[in-house]
Amino acid sequence: MKIAVAAETRDGESRVAMVPELVGKLTSLGYDVAVEPGAGQHALLSDEEYVDSGAVIDADAIVDADVVVSVQPLTIERIRRLRRGASTVCFLPTTFEQDAVIDLRDCGITAFAMELVPRISRAQSMDALSSQALVAGYRCAIVAAGMLRRFFPLNMTAAGTVQPAEVVVLGAGVAGLQAIATAKRLGAVVRAYDVRAAAAEEIRSMGAKSIDLELETLEGAGGYAREMTEDRAARQRELLTPYIANADALITTAAVPGRQAPMLVTAAMVEEMRPGSVVVDLAAETGGNVEGSVAGEVVRIGNAQVWGGRNVPSQMPGPASRLYAQNIVNILTLMTATGEGTETGTFAPDFDDEIVAGSCVTHDGEIRHEPTRTALEGAS
Ligand code: NAD
Image 1: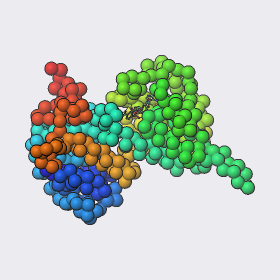
Image 2: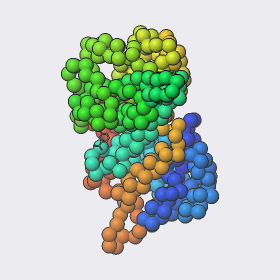
Image 3: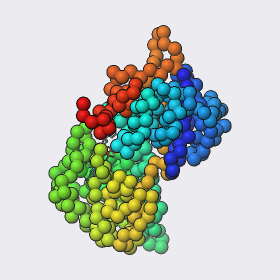
Image 4: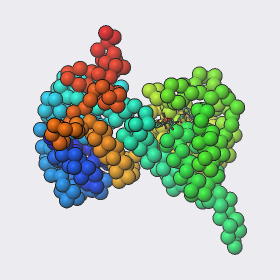
């Protein structure tokens, strides 16, 4: 059976779903691997490296593939070129990609969405949301350090002492904790806040100070954050104001699954920051944690430069692709039939497995992901 590695066609996407280093994992499962020409070029991976690792380069790789792997969903024109019964494995944000979901259904494609992989411990090695959040969190801290025109660490020199930068991080999930760890490693004094009860200990374990606002914690299903009421949000903003006014760099990474990013910081709060301050809003693309931030741009609010994140993991395409490709290898391994009497390299997802069932969006001409089915076809 054949796995195709698609070249990404969406604007600004620099990652690739498979790296040469991991092609051997797929061929040893018994698959043939075909890569579209130039698929790895933005991640600095050449066609020759893929060939050396056992893949072939083929401009029509997707047409007769059994499985197509990519980072972003395929465009509708490309979905229509796939073989009926083929599978796709990629990020597939079903709320925004409804036309693609309809085409995947109507073309008889089995589509798996990496963001729907259940966050259970058995699926940790397939968790692409976490692997990409790790890259994004690191990048946010580095961007803040690069934009700030002062040191992060304390410097004690013969010419005198320079105090360390004060960094505040809001949201201490996977990305936030990585931003905290990175800012700490660079020597900044880091304070962080998150609404989840478990977060305070996680923040402290990174060597940062946990900001205690003495507000109720907000935990919903599966240990994720719950949405705030407007009253709670206003109180949180009021209590955070002095911490933000005192920060040289503010990094925001807060999100609530399935919702717009919560607005944690008003423009008026940013205006209280000192000249030369920087704000890095990782959530700019999903509504923004900071009022006025713009995804993919740096805007000035008061005395601060405000950087809005846009496809942040793609800004470090090498490591982001390597981690994503490992997630892909792990999920394809789960979906490969093994055991006596099975041909090697047989792609045979077991729909009784909760990871397979949970991540499946379309199969056999049907939408299998219930919220998407209801949104597109109405309640049954
Ligand atoms: P996320 O991207 O949905 O949210 C980022 C952070 O924003 C979360 O920590 C959330 O609590 C915080 N947040 C939301 N609203 C906020 C507000 N108003 N103010 C401040 N902070 C706010 O979350 P994530 O990073 O994907 O993960 C969150 C949790 O899930 C973490 O506990 C993480 O360890 C856990 N997790 C578990 C698994 C697993 O079991 N396989 C995998 C990944 C993450």
